[in-house]
Image 1 (cartoon, one colour):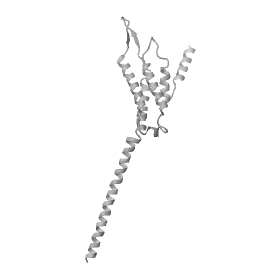
Image 2 (cartoon, one colour):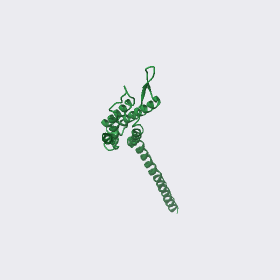
Image 3 (cartoon, one colour):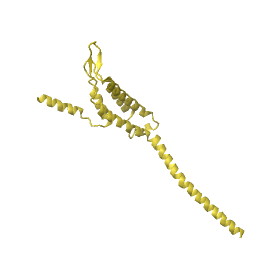
Image 4 (tube, helix red, strand yellow):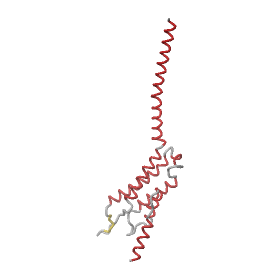
Length: 181
């Protein structure tokens, strides 16, 4: 009788152990998947999500500040004064901050992997940075004239972002309208 009772207790213990193993598997697998998903989204996919956020900010800036230019005048004392120096500083700082953020994109550990698929390469990053800084430098008129490369920088930035580039077509249409008059 003792042998049967011992065998029965052993089989119950094995069943309990197996049910505990199933419980561990049921908890471990979801935790492992959650952990790997977290690592993927926080580290592996970070350059892609950062580029998408930066691209969104750049698109908003190209629309929001595309026509902004600081007008200046000379006061009675002969000093050059600006229409709204606060706004000039805001726009200039925003464009320079975006240029800096674009430059930090390649500092991510997984940038080299993603640049082949979704991210701009180093040359394109440098061009975008140059366009943004050049645009920030061309906000203020010098001697009554604005930088002639200003529109080219904005259009170059739009091209790098994949936005439609209608500037030259619009200029041609405006010139045609003015020449008919």
